[in-house]
Length: 213
View 1 (cartoon, rainbow, N blue to C red):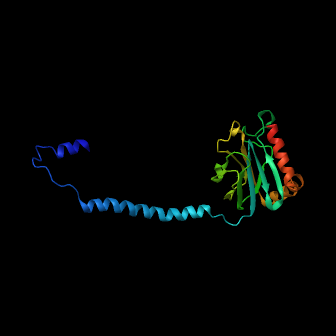
View 2 (cartoon, rainbow, N blue to C red):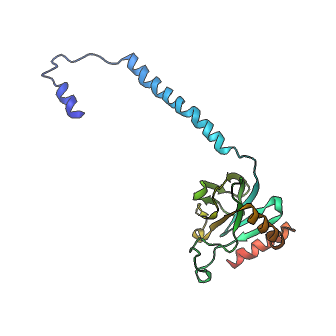
View 3 (cartoon, one colour):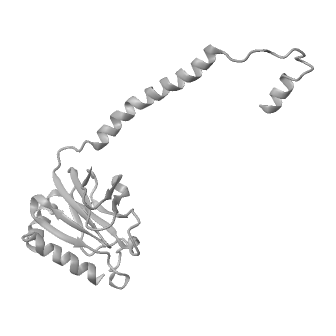
């Protein structure tokens, strides 16, 4: 382009230089047209942003609480609460992925809307499961919401995605998506094993686990 301009507007070819200083029409056009393009792009974008923040009616509600350095979970409607800690290398069973397997798994039913309430008990964390297209910050004193609906049974993994301290890399998320029948059976056992009867007791357990880590 520069070479073309030098040749096109060289002095020998244009002995009398143009006196044009501006062009009102062009200046208006290159201002108005980009504005119109931005509006055309913005209108549907706002609809998408609104839709992203709109959570459909949930079949299952899960609360995720970030701690240094593990996750705590509650199923508020079922009065269930438990902690989920990464399994150390020496305790891994065959087939369990290193740095991703947890001692207690999240279990949700397939083809159901799962709403996730996300917060933190200390520093900022982030609950993220890439396969679900989900990532939300966990901030103390604030509850962020997201949701997912998985149409295929299986085991899905995620990790804390907010730098939260020396063991940030050791906060995996393990989600088991199962049939509704298996989920119902799991709930029966979970209500016996993880019954949330005394919230104060859970806080003591959380504190003790944090001290052990």
